[in-house]
Length: 143
Image 1 (spheres, rainbow, N blue to C red):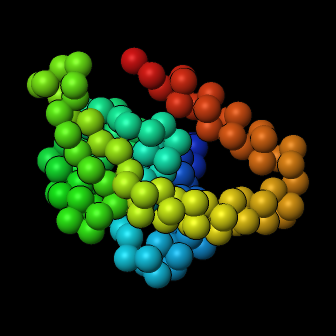
Image 2 (cartoon, one colour):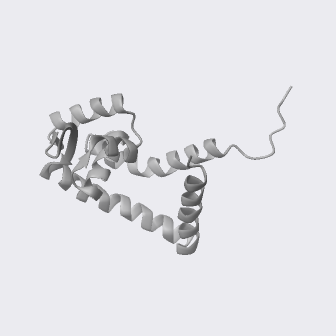
Image 3 (cartoon, rainbow, N blue to C red):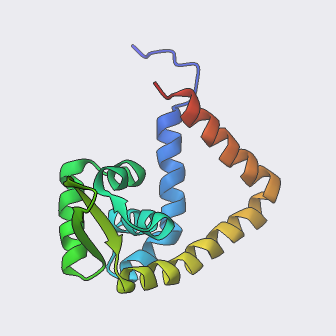
């Protein structure tokens, strides 16, 4: 017996779209020895500077226990540094090192070129609509 679904599988489509986009970005990440998770961390740090680890976890969509391992490897590789938050010793903050920021700058050119290609292929208006629709879905599903 089959279940008569009316709507397409939105979570699967979103994952498929993510994988399609990442197919273009992943080779550049691997060329620099980065996992998808490490890139998400560097992107957060590149956009916001020094960030509390909880915020990194939320913005990079990495669960706390996994983030600990990711940050340990990144620290070992000289991409980030961690320290106690000077204002609240219970918290840890993370920042990209000069090496990490250089990598963000280099990779951002490749990634932005891919986004420019997407904008040219889809059209500026459609890409803007896609961003707006995704933002609306995210907002709609907030508790």
